[in-house]
Image 1 (cartoon, rainbow, N blue to C red):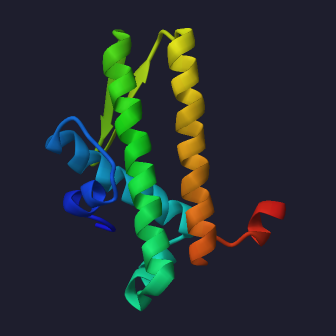
Image 2: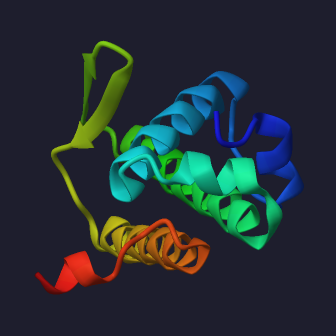
Amino acid sequence: MIINAEEYYDMGFTASSSAELEGCLKRAEYTIAALTEGRYETALAAGGKAAEYVKQAAAFQTYKLVKEQQQAVSSGSTEKVAIGDYSYTSTSEQSSASAQQNDSVYDLSMQTVRLLRASGCLFGGREVR
């Protein structure tokens, strides 16, 4: 994994349960691997600032997934889908409070992308194409 639970908590992030956190950490790694096309491994191996940015991006992505899961549980009507190791939860209702949470979740996703770009793992030219 890119980060473990201890590193996640050391960065100041929270989660309601350790089982929930472990799943979100793994799914965050899948997302970062897809966004960087596997380049994150090179940055981690090299160490330095790039590795720190990748770890921070993993923490932000994990926190986003934790928040989505908490939102799904609190909204009432949820559907849980699992495909192998990958799973997600979706909700059928959305109140104005959850719409605001979705905006903050979007901000967390953008923070992940910014950190990956700063680490050198995300190639900006591809976005223009």
